[in-house]
Length: 207
Image (cartoon, rainbow, N blue to C red; front, side, top):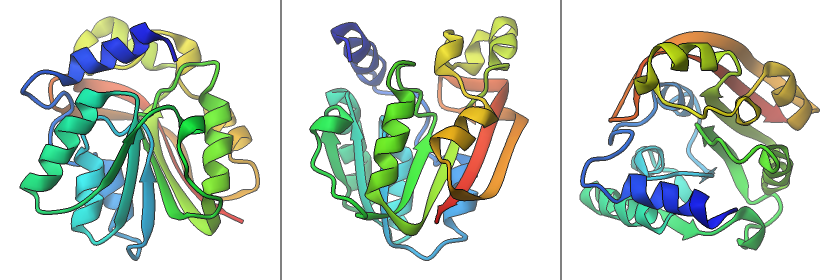
């Protein structure tokens, strides 16, 4: 990824305030509470709110991001909550995750650059064991209409970085679809996710 992309996220996470708050994403919380704790990976985990929540539930948590500032904040949040998370900084292909390592992968607003997002999804599939679960929430392609009305809701302005249900079906082909839906939701997450937006929600089990 480009230096400017990395700098953007380091700048966002360098403030004292948590960009997306300290509480977990509502959809992630709802889905994790249905599962028995195991091993879980959080790609593009930012400041750690979701990883820390999972650790508090008893999950063995791994996370990564390109932002050293995000990792710094995440480890501080973990310490404050008296949990441990394994948080690495780098791009996915450089990290040493193993095939079938995880019971779950949580992709929460993991908007990777358009040219690698499907590649990342297919790579993450290798790290998920058979019967493992993907939990996904991110902005849909029609979210641009919401963003034009209210920039405070956040999200990418490049439609190629946004998602459709067909993309999820393709990227996670062969999964049992537990839920796949495009929904309008009200976001209230920190400084950068506030207001009505359109998201894709997906829960799939690897066959």
